[in-house]
Image 1 (cartoon, rainbow, N blue to C red):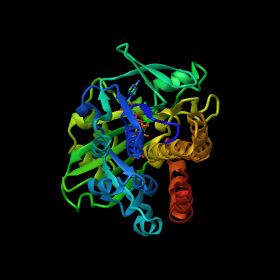
Image 2 (cartoon, helix red, strand yellow; image 1 turned 90 degrees about the vertical axis):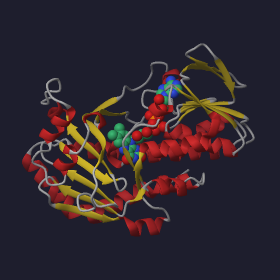
Image 3 (cartoon, helix red, strand yellow; image 1 turned 120 degrees about the vertical axis):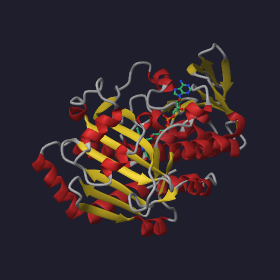
Length: 394
Ligand SMILES: Cc1cc2nc3c(=O)[nH]c(=O)nc-3n(C[C@H](O)[C@H](O)[C@H](O)COP(=O)(O)OP(=O)(O)OC[C@H]3O[C@@H](n4cnc5c(N)ncnc54)[C@H](O)[C@@H]3O)c2cc1C
């Protein structure tokens, strides 16, 4: 790489690790700082969809095959109502053939472990980036134990509450935006192709601000994600009930296998996460000089397109390419946003709109939504979704 001999990446999430693998392969000496202190704490998390675009990006680093080997290929994306009516069923296999890459369902921990392996000994656990300063020749990164490290570029891949972003924006930033719902995600041991068949990503839309997504991860395990509007959440008596009881109550009348999936889940496996994003803006950009943001640090989006990690992977691949092709780091940093902003901003907006429709509570409104999905989702909805997803630039 002409302009970069060494790099520091803040954050060993999916974006940071992908960038580290790419830099390493390009011969750049790289350190990844991760605030969490043990790999087991880093390698936790629920299940995950990686759509075709993310797999194509991973192919740039020859990681697509190992990742595919760790997951299952998703061949149908099925939308149903809480009355068990099929609203749409996307046949994903022909899309995989057309785009030359599968859509995958896998454990987040498997993806992280594969990326950690590929990143090698570059990851420093228990190392929290506390700030940085930069000059014309390089960037100095400060760790919270007082250590200082110097490199040609700092990549802020430190997630939705990014310290590197704070350092860049210095208080001039739009606040995170609460989406008005919580995602309760879990992996449960539940065998049986008759209960949850392999290869279908089920996406259930209900009345009363409730949704439920699930898919089989392997012979033994099913991943699920219950999305509950805040108005629903407020009615849960969280102090008196366990998470599992809250979920069982909310989804009691939903069609089989939803209550069975919840019932099979261990209390400690259920992790509720309030969902936030950040409306896209240009104030301060994704980077300045020798410091650049990728993934959720640059553009957190709600989970509704299953694209947050996909976009973090695309960012990482794009950045490595730009650093390879530009003579100066600041020029590559500026080029990343020019290349990626429009695509990612479109996804942030679409994901927000889908999430807002999921919060609808009234029966007639939800019935109208069902009708709309039945009429348009197999045709127009799928076409638009694929157009947005596959308009890849990295
Ligand atoms: C419920 C749910 C389901 C989702 N499902 C999908 C899906 O199916 N498909 C998909 O593509 N996306 C999905 N997403 C989105 C996806 O999880 C994120 O977009 C993705 O993890 C972002 O990756 P990242 O590397 O940018 O950040 P993160 O994964 O958040 O990683 C940031 C890392 O930085 C570390 N860190 C933070 N601060 C510091 C610091 N100061 N110093 C050092 N280290 C630091 C953190 O510990 C963490 O390891 C989902 C999100 C949620 C909430």
